[in-house]
Amino acid sequence: MRRVGVYVGAVVTAAALVSGCAGSSGGTGGGEGAPASAGSSAPAGSAPAEAKGGDEDLAARDVELGKAGFQDHDVWGPGAYVTPYSITNRGDEAASYFVGLEYLDADGDVLGSTGVTADKLGSGKTSKGDTAPLEAEIRNGELADIRSVRVSTVERTSA
Image (cartoon, rainbow, N blue to C red; front, top):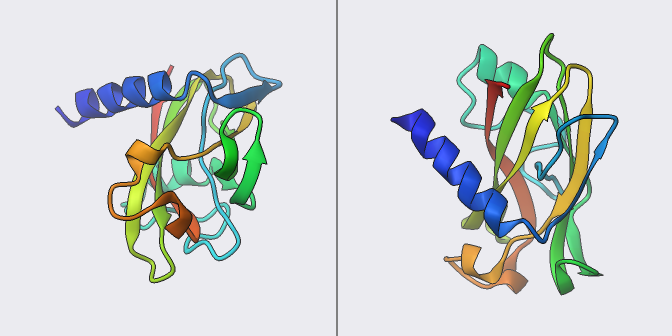
């Protein structure tokens, strides 16, 4: 049941991010991925707090976050909180990824969340892009309240 929920969440997120700005560098797949920022509570490349070890820990190492912050963006609009990300498949075969992101205020409280995907990413390939939360995804404050972003979930499945 959990896997179905993840796939449904990934489909909904992918649909919401269709207008997103993402590219694939050297990969067959590519889509949206995960972020980090200056002041992020999870440093780039670190395992998310909810990783339980094993495969989840390994998948978390495949995600790197760039410096996030407010900027005017061609896709996300003026004053968007843009988060660059990179997902690298370090496994031996193709895999698909869903990366959950949480946006935090100055106190470290979660304002809202979103997610990005990389579908059928070949072994050794990287998907790069950027994302930004939509106003509807910030439920516990305002977009202007965002101070950092962290990876909350990394799901890796065989393609």
